[in-house]
Amino acid sequence: MADVKLHGLWASPFSPRIQLALNLKGVSYEWVGEDSENKSAQLLQYNPIYKKLPVLVHDGKPLPESLIILEYIEETWKNSPFLPEDPYERSRVRF
Image (cartoon, rainbow, N blue to C red):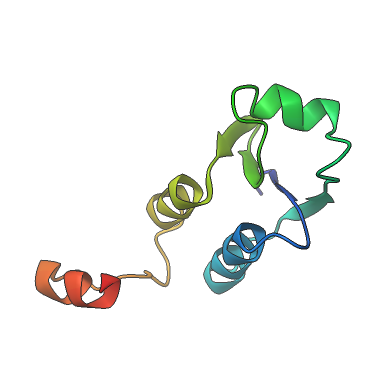
């Protein structure tokens, strides 16, 4: 099984969207709760530019920014797609 960790903040609106996506795909992950006032060394290593949450770490490779993470989850775990295959239907769902 792949090693998946989600560094997040319970009060953030962005971390739960990643948790929901991982749960919908059935991906097991480890939650790493962060403190926005006292950022961990790991967080600063994984997102050195913006130092923001969430950060998904998959097999040791960090991914920051929730929209990028959502796209990665969709492209990595093909089961239960979030969006329809038809481009028009996809655009309607995005709307």
